[in-house]
Image (cartoon, rainbow over all chains, first blue to last red):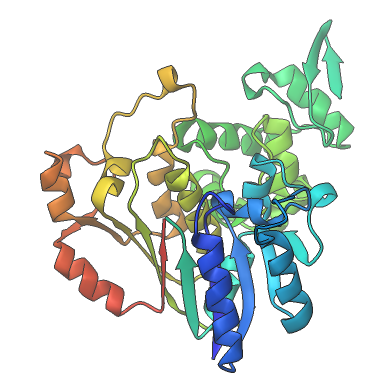
Length: 119
Length: 110
Length: 123
């Protein structure tokens, strides 16, 4: 099954990004395809490469980047939400790309299931 | 960046959009148009003024599709098509006309 | 984009218009989504019903009042707006308090409508 994911909350403060990640991994392990994760609202903060969690904590940003590298999951950050919150190409982590809200709608159209993680 | 006219300076962003949309007036509109290589005709003003009215009423700049339909309704079917609007504003009515009208930069989310 | 495919998108608004950015950014999604010519509806539930309550004045807050934008939805061919009856009643509101024409529905009815959707985006 082709699965699309929307993440509406930032990393560490809120569990949305963790849950989405665990869900995506589990889905991929079961043989599904996670085609795109769209980051919106504070969710865009999952994409800054300035993120440096303590060594004994999970690295949420790198974890997503790895999922992109290993499974081709398209990580799209909403440009309007990102500009509001100071996320630009210059501090964007590798594996992510900045694009428009149209990518969210397109993902909804193309996915068999669409799952929102948020508050 | 900034533009200057009649001894007053108007701050703009790097693409030339007014930073303070409340500072807009017709003179600064003409100046922005000039920088876009547009010579403001009455048809240009029709669109620019319409955009400003729309923004004042709804607090958004309409999508091109919505603008086209609304222009057709207001000024006649021969004007309600994107070809007409692109002839007036070659780089796109959303971007250029909004800039001249002093509206916020469309987030261009598509 | 896959041409010609039409899915049912429902945007569920559950939060008050101010205090958080969810309402504004949800509205931004709806406006962009309208260009994709999908079957779009909006549901207002819980504190989300406040988004449509007439007469907001945000001057003191120092934030933009985006309520007028709900009145532009019709221009974008977004005209299926459903409001939860129980949420209105619990907040002492009636249809007359709202800034746009809507259809009032019970929580259960909105639930049934959700079941018929392809995509439900909750904000």
